[in-house]
Length: 253
Image (cartoon, rainbow, N blue to C red; front, side):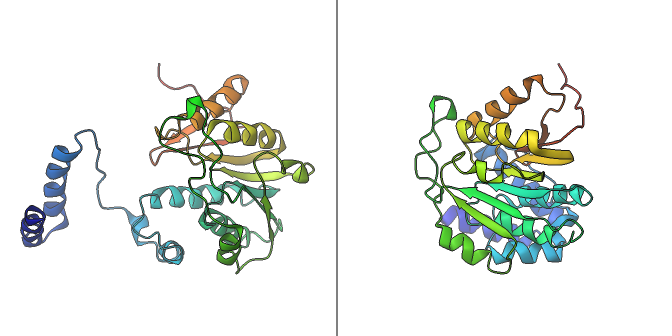
């Protein structure tokens, strides 16, 4: 603690962000050599409406704010795409809140938002899901999600293990799907069901794609898309997305 206090006093003497950032990166290299810092000059950090949304869920300084911002930006792509929106894996409802917020700004389509979750946390991880997750992790009650969504009314919560209730939206046309279920099998079930229902130009976002904590989710997506023209586009925040009907070039060999 004494070392941390001394470091803090030293840091306070560096008035410019650039000087503080250089010092921070030097310390970071010692603690986590493989970590890659980003420049702290990002306009989206000052996006007041988006920051208000983050504050609603106490996520202003959370590690996943960049993922939430990319969710927000990708939702802008479907403004003229017909169809409903879907989230598989809601946690406390922050993603669904943002999706519904954007749906309300595109009234020409009168979208309905569909939320699928066990509300009992994760199912048992399989052999290919790594060692990070355990059954029951990330459990949030349906009541809590409903409370967080109390500003909205054009949505349905479907409680049950994926894909047990997917059949209830069998006849729906879909413009956007957010898959955030961390594990191989529910990720595979989600993309298998919703990919054929996507409108041309619709977006599938997998929150866990490219995260080393969720190797099963990445494998599930890649396996399903192996014979498809669309491939997932990695995002630097540790997620991936595709646009239905948009052929994607292969990655560098």
